[in-house]
Image (cartoon, rainbow, N blue to C red; front, side):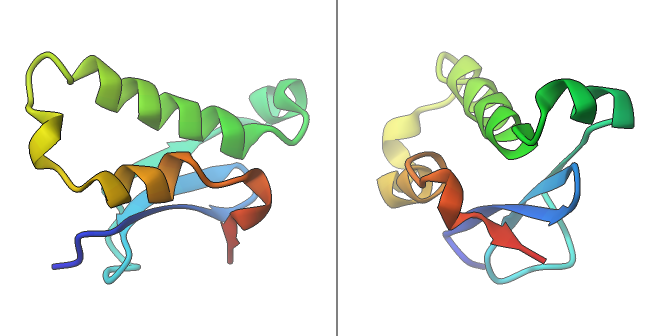
Length: 87
């Protein structure tokens, strides 16, 4: 099992969080409706990234993030928008 996760836009408005070694089984899938895509004006990936980040941060009180790999979080949350993986 890979220790790396990737946040990937798999189609327009559909973003998944998955293990880098398992492309067929996303851990999380975020799909924006056409109405929301119009409101976000191309910022769907950025919003999805913040949604995942907020979810992990809200769990901080319940899990010990110190035991998790720092590189994993840096890979996902510190990438610039131009580093997106598109399929």
